[in-house]
Image (cartoon, rainbow, N blue to C red; front, side, top):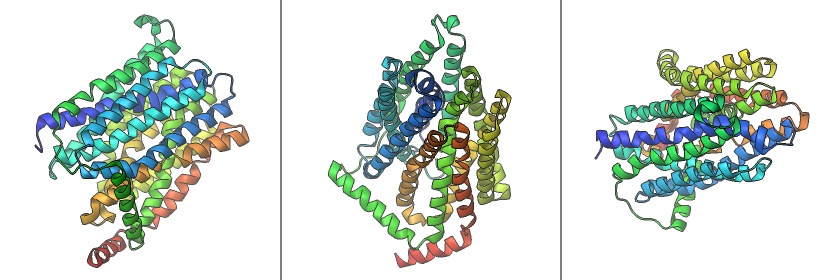
Length: 425
């Protein structure tokens, strides 16, 4: 039943559940632990390359699976079951990091890639259930509730994990590395526990059951349709390429920031505090940036955010102390939620409403392809130069490309293209 408070809260709690992985594992402890523990014995440039490889490999696998997953999600029936399956896969892979010994970076990469596949795939089914629990009138507010609970839930567990790491003796833990390993297990339990409400209380609309091979065929047929459509929607196509470039840079900064701080010799405690700053700055800033977008225009607000991220990468190149790292953490938090939320809303202005499902499926797949080029770019440049600073500043290329392409998008011309496309269809 749409707009049921029980179902809405149960749905939104899944964001509370999986955000623990995004904050504690993906953004914080995995990069730190990877360079200091699992890649022990490798120099910092090699460690950065391995971490970039892990992030890119996870993104490639998730993106390759996206068309099949999207087809199943569109046809219904399996969505909730597969959400639970992938959530449990992600949680189990995360908890398994407890068993990875020092120096065993290939095993850590395998578990991390598996956890990322679970995280991203479950999110596809989670997103597809939004229209099941919320009516068209409430879909924006319910979606925002999910984001809000994600920031709060992920932030609270992360705060607890940080305290465990900084003050292990207060929790009866022998040392910091053990606290990090315990945190991986806690994230797994948290993820599973708060996945139960959506599994138990959200009713899924009955749909047509689809065989795996049919889902594969339907998924790639849908992609072909969208690609053919983009030939007639030039401004939509330009935006998608621009989005791919700049969001790749954004995701790379989020995933690689702690590894970069570690390479510069900053204490782990300072890196963790910086991530906490980003987490708690991001939520109110996302709301405020949305208001700014309404005043100056969504496209202009996105361009400002892209410029800000390019500036962050440049300042990061010259960064020498922890205080500067804290300032950059605040800057990332100021623009992180805004650039993601406004990009999604701006896209609605560039696509035909009658084909919104297909175009958003392609948009989400493109988002999953993001963080493939960026981490590899940082890793390869760092490996070649032997200097992480050159790796981080190389991301300016992605932001510059995204900025130039987005400036070429003409919303008025896009409306004419959409009208012609709809009449032709």
